[in-house]
Image (cartoon, rainbow, N blue to C red):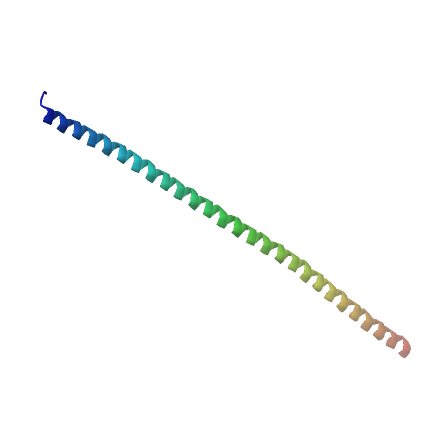
Length: 101
């Protein structure tokens, strides 16, 4: 292989092949990094959405339980008021009965 033109051809071909392999490796590594970054960002966004959703549910449950306590308190007060009114009616009826006998 003493022909310099032939040597230059094979050297150029080997250089082009090596550069192509390095370029392919760099692109593959870059795309892998982009894919990994994308997956991490999607997972991060997913966790963020779940956290916000869980916090909203927790707040809603807290408000609902407070409302239930308020409603129960109001229902209890209404029951007490009704019982007091019935006791007053029974007393009036009892006084009328006593005074008529």
